[in-house]
Length: 268
Image (cartoon, rainbow, N blue to C red; front, side):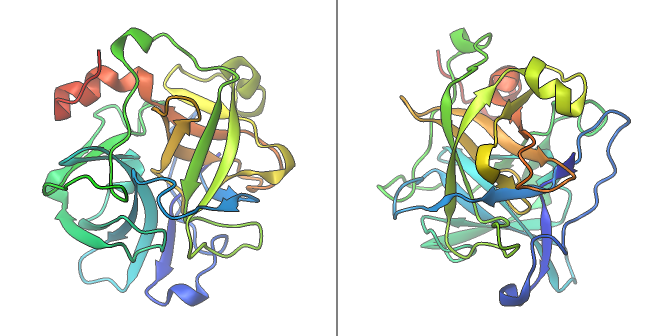
């Protein structure tokens, strides 16, 4: 498996999702996330007001990695831990254009919180960004987390939507937000592709090459009905985004206690 984070030069127009993926060394049984939205559809304005575009930057560097995150509170964005290994991020809110929101906040790494068991233990690719206060509108808004009484809910066979600005089927990064509808599968079925999986990982089916891809890292997986955030885009198949192998996410219900302890956000 490969991580779905992509590093590009500041000249976005010439970036390639496949040629510029970061290499993250996995733990012995780790999954190597590397792919994002392929064969999806363009999002209409306001479809996913909870998603943010992350430009992940390193001091004194001309390169930038791209990823996504999810607004879960007025001062909190939830993302993948592997998106938070740099010096600062620019968080763009309220627009479908990658890296060009209605406004943005630049946040330094002292406001990053990565799960203490990542990357040494699978299923913990989750992180928080403490942000300046954001007012909610029709274009910038949070999505609810699962309730604590849903901690044992696996959401198998539920339909969800994943969105991001990652690689498309043509190999190019998306300028405009792309979304794809995907069905959650059991970890037993997913383990046929990736080996034994802990509860902290959630997988979705990717029929017809519809999948997340490189550059979608950290973005949301949200249920269709009564929208709640059930997954954080984490990894894909090393064979590519369109080959039909499951796409992997960090399971949010496995980390409700961690989110509450670090952000104070919880639903009962």
